[in-house]
Image (cartoon, rainbow, N blue to C red; front, side, top):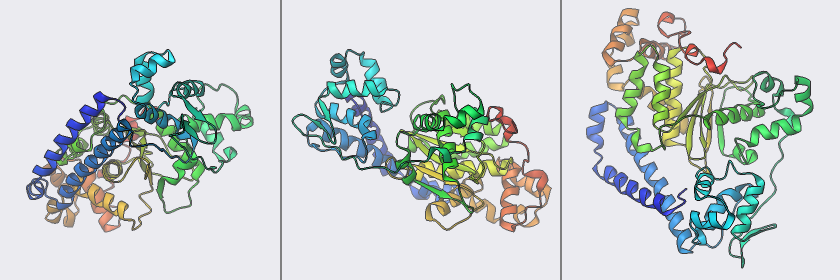
Length: 430
């Protein structure tokens, strides 16, 4: 969301550059360079997706600033923080002027608005609303009644259905020093606090997610895992804001080639963080059957990985699969969470698309179609082919095993036990 004139000018410049890149995009040249029509298409679609997002932000800001938007609707007062920003812009107040009205520093208002008031207390939200002359009852409006918010009832979560024992064992209730029995007796306060620190409106978040699983899923456990990943993502040190256009085919090829390095998973995380994407490793909870997930935390894309299978071939495929979900499928306010059990298969369009693009990125189709290793399936042929591509042999061995539906061959090449060791902070086996 654009919150001030400086961000508005920056966004306009970014949009102009983006549109120029789209006009100059040559699909044939890119396909020839990367050896894949699917990856060439994904690259231009990522550019167009970013163009749509920036255009929408500009239109919203311009409409608010001009006074054209006189009515704002929401499904809950939990969306009040975002509407505080919209109301300030609609009243043509700068962040400095709002700071003066509330007795705060301009930098504090900027920080609040940068994360949509996630760090603000309820008392502070009320003070901001009063400074903006918002009258909040069943509706919230700028006097004399120009801003309305609809607030229908929401479904209540049953806090005692969360996996509290496992959450306690993993130390997720930060700041709580009591016993397990004390935690079980405090479910109605501990769990809501844990959840709403990461997701202000968990019942709405449940409707903006999709789950790919071949087994029955415990949605309370899944929500707990999601909140933990988002809490860790909030602390991640990222190199800047995410821009879809920066993740072109060359960037993806560089990421893939990290697999050839002994510390490839760590290098991949660093590369994603530099691109503004948080990569979080957190073991799955029982009854979630989860390999990975793509989520949004505000405007920050988050890839969560469970490392359910401690193998290099699985790590790189799951990582690329979720990355393409981030690039092509996540949209704020629409589909904000995608959870994947890659053993489940399925025929959903977005899953087939992510599978195809991940496979093409790891081993381009033109190379795979003529690869001797694909047919000979010997250790030597796999190693030679992987060396020619500049990737880890595990990626080739994994592709062969998947195509052959034979997971007993090439066991020595899939990198068993070579992933979790890079992420000791995740507490595997603790």
